[in-house]
Image (cartoon, rainbow, N blue to C red; front, side, top):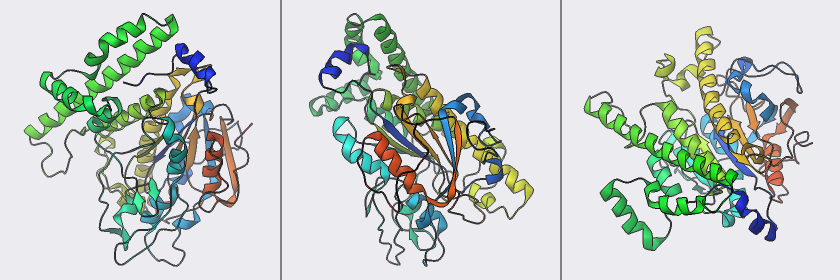
Length: 433
């Protein structure tokens, strides 16, 4: 198992010239646009009020930047006709125009997370982590002649290679915390399955020995970390039992629910957010993406007493009840973002927290879903990027400012020396002190 950053590691890190904590980046995507009137703060600068949708961020207001005015021009049709949902997800992190092909061919560009992973991936166990909460086809067509891969992925390793995403918490857990030693994986996995033992049961002796060699603060941090891993494992197993019971009772007949995925969307989301947080804390990876739903998703949010599909409602046509339901879904999604922020803030690191050394971008590549707007995108970023970003503000940019300017700035702040990304025209001014 990987360990969190401990003070006992400092001498070695200083000797290697890398005592400063690494900067991490995560990107959380939500589909179908927003109720923009209930999203956009009225005031500019530090003295702004959080509107209804963003209100769950109130405990973290000083840790976030609300960004308005940014555009993904390549999400527009630019002569390619219908297909705004496919283009929205495809362009969010790439800034590239997706190929619309009758033959189902795909061509796009490299996404910003993979640009960063190319540089940082050699320093961590995993170059990047791609997660999601909904399954999605890679083949076939899903939106007006566009391949399904566009709607179901935001991470792209190359022009024709979507990064894919893992939606099964059990598989993510095993990937992050199981041994990567090829001589050990087979027998250890078999033995663990045989005795149904926790991963922590295999490392308890080593953990106790290490705990006796480190200082008080490191010992506390180690105990908290191991407790957190145990808790996630317990919740994954509980979710599996819940799913099995629901199947046995016939409560999910007719639904395509993949094995070992919680029936509760919120529990599913929290598990994935926890795994991102622990992966960052242990420096298992520094780059992560998560699609809270696929673009164009027509999920019904029964937990919010919303029985119609999200995509259907997003075409609100000005109907007040549709707009009310959209804002409830938007606010619910923001709660998931707030949960991740809280997790990262609770993880001490150096003189600050893991959140302080991160940049977590949340948003959509559509503004108003009824009009399929690709300008004035709803975006909010949490974390100080290692101390370089001034948070606690609402920044408004001139119309048609490329969102890729923000992505380019994030790369540079993280230490990637990039001249441009997608259709960027330069770095985004105003983020840094």
